[in-house]
Image (cartoon, one colour):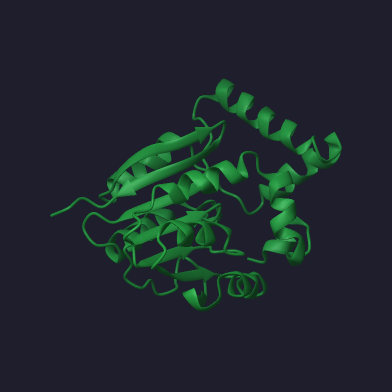
Length: 220
């Protein structure tokens, strides 16, 4: 998937424009990075994008290196420029790329691009195998409520955030366009899938339909 065409922007605009698209963006990434063990030495970032979350993680785990996977070659080059020698980049899809062993796995606004429940559970199982006992998956994503009336309130909140920068019609058009490649699972469904794959999963942060999930592989 090409991030620029999905969002309708130029790749060079991503780091600036993402804040106009996603509410609480800075707070989400900071909250996710804060969950990382400072002793971590290798972080696997799934859907690394421009490296915004990875950079925050490296600020917490100062001796760590990052292995980053993304299907967009142009955005991987941006991550390379941002992270330098501390990152090894893999061009490939999350469903099929080889996962190196890692102390922690992180992902920001990427796992919702996996289309079906079986495909997503297969990725969760691959993450589980890549982690040591006690290792953690930290996932930043959009997980709306399963309850219809609450989900409508959450969707209205996201639309209102977009309207701070864009006209209402443009905000609605963005949300409609993104639905073609974004497959959001409810928060309850996401937690159940993680637990079914062996993780002990909980919500570490939540604002509206955006969450940070912490899913730990149990120790033997």
